[in-house]
Amino acid sequence: MHLQFKEHLTLDGNIPIPLYRQIHQRVREAVETGLLRPGDRVPATRALAQELGLARGTVATAYKLLIAEGYVEARGQGGCVIAGRLASVTQTRQPVRTRPAPREMDGGASTPKPFQMGLPALDAFPRKTWARLAARAARATQLHHMVKESCFGAPELRSAIAGYLKIGRGIDCAPEQVFITSGYRSSMELVMRALLAPGEQVWIEEPAYPPTVALLRGAGLMPVPVPVDQEGLAVPLGLRLAPDARAAVVTPAHQSPLGATLSACRRRALLDWAAQEQAWLIEDDYDGEFRYVSRPLPALASCDTAGRVIHCGTFSKVLFPSIRLAYVVVPPALVDIFENTCSVIATGCPVLTQTIVSNFMLEGYFSRHVQRMRELYGERRQLAIDGLSSVLGNRLQFAPQHGGMHLLALTADGSDKALADRMREDGMAPQVLSEWYAGTPGQCGLLLGFTNISSVAQAAELGQRIARIMDE
Image 1 (cartoon, rainbow, N blue to C red):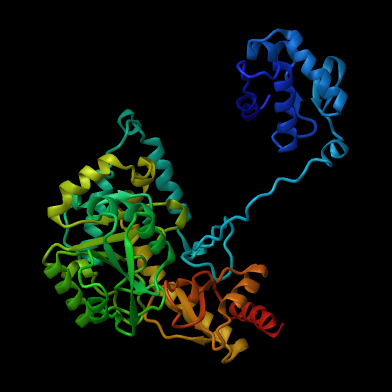
Image 2 (image 1 turned 90 degrees about the horizontal axis):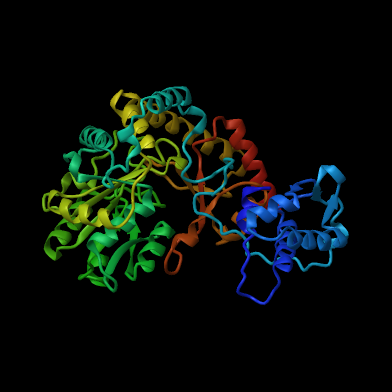
């Protein structure tokens, strides 16, 4: 008998329904929900009676009912199996109404789809190197690795991240300032629990990553949308809208989703406001490594002299999404507060995964991989634009961006949602720009991941599918 079915077959001696009837009902439910399928063997009456602590006659009575109704077939010495012809038995049962699965912002599919957001170039990931490091880490597992790891993160990974950030993002931090989490949402939960209280106002960019808004509202905070222009977050507008806000969530390197870089003037103004108001700046550095017109700009945290910036990084965009590994870097004065918060909420990631990533970084593979991806994405970004434009012409306007992993394709007639819905029906995975606004949409368009487009021909073929949808 399936282990799942054994767990499903729970009986209650305190209710008025006879035990044989309860067995009968549970088996029917297991068949009708697909837990048991035609041909599956069911336990012998003696075995099931012993398993459940019942008289054999109780189980035999239940089986007789199931055989009479056509759910179970008796095969002599072969025992009993689920009947092969159940259509006539189950066709009168009302279908179970299920809610449609929610559409995830990052695609949520196990198979990559064209234009899927937040998805690195999976074909270019060094899987052989990763597999070798993974095998080595597994072979090296000792007893102390099997004990619960520190909730702050594996020491070697915290050290590796601190070393990388000093060179790659300009952040001078100690390993104890780095806290390992299981992704962006986990990072945000850690920051909110440690520093913010329900009812407080938080600046967000307008437009912004929708899960950020949902997370803030779910924590009882009050998001205040502050418009974004070509210089990034409009700090003067934020000062007028909510000068006493407790925090701001920003994407300085590559504004999500419009792609603007926070200018030096705006960075200074934002840091000055945070220092004067004792507010916190939550820097979401989701793809800051990928800038194509110059070297990546230093992180906002690298300019912080007042200890107000909380830097959030992730490995999902650099390595692969299913790794579910991210980190938070806090000012020295906040280390104790975050250690106390981590001790209360679980934010970490499996030790084996942390070991593999730390070795990947310490042995130089990570930096080389980032450099290769930066070059590759610069090429693929142009391939995607050239291929799509060759078919679509001016029907989509590609907004200029200096970095990132997606294209911003503006539509002129405000039909981005209808177009995206049709594209999803055709197997593509665009995001809708207008849905990223908390208030009235300022622009309409599509957000198209390009990192897995490897040729102009591939982009042109996708463009033809889009053109056909637009024509229809």
